[in-house]
Image (cartoon, rainbow, N blue to C red; front, side):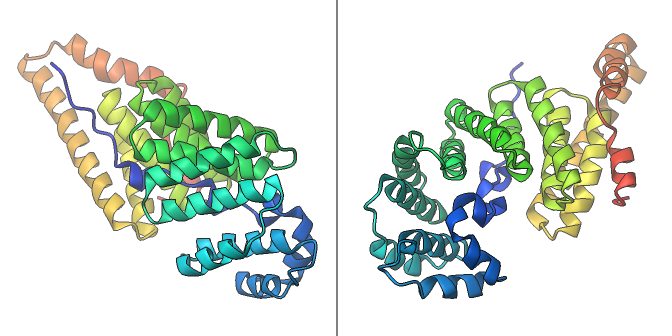
Length: 313
């Protein structure tokens, strides 16, 4: 009998590498301005005072557009992009990425994908643009995912992850391992998805990022519950995710996690009852739950121990 795959809404669970990108990964030339301006407001103000004839003006204008975009000041971003000189190939590629990210923030996935694709054709041939190339691949993966083209999303995300490992920036690796793990669930790469999500959980724990930990726990719970049918293993992952979503003030995902936990407990109760009344041989119950669960626990960190060690329970 065919069972419908329950996979969470892509708009809720795929993160963006933009959120953890340090400025100097993108604009090393502007280090003096960054060092002198400790806040975003002061930095954008300092950048706006750079003379248009100054050699660093295009970089400063692009950085200012980047910051305005993160603050959802879309009209100001459009005005800023109109004033940015794109005389060099590098500036044109970055400008296309900014235009694509603006379209993404306005929920225009196809337009964003097209602009990211154009940026990629430019940036992939240039030296010294690793950060921009990574953000472009990340955007292509995310827009493919939103449009449910999961094979393409996996391809771009894995390219981005490979580049992130090369760049040696662990927050990028954390975001991208999570996203690869999510996408692979759609392509039935379940054991690979588990491996990536466990790595994302470990990296989120290292970085004390509770939101990222909650998302990884939620996806692992979903994977063990809906795909592997390891109900006993899924339950503690759901429980830990539930705590963190509550602490992070994320009511929709808190509600989805609670719903998953209830269904998982009901499924486990059904198995136990079926075995007791003879509808399911006890050997089948053990194969589906006890034996496979114990074998799996020998390779997988127990979330109870993980949560207790970091003060979540």
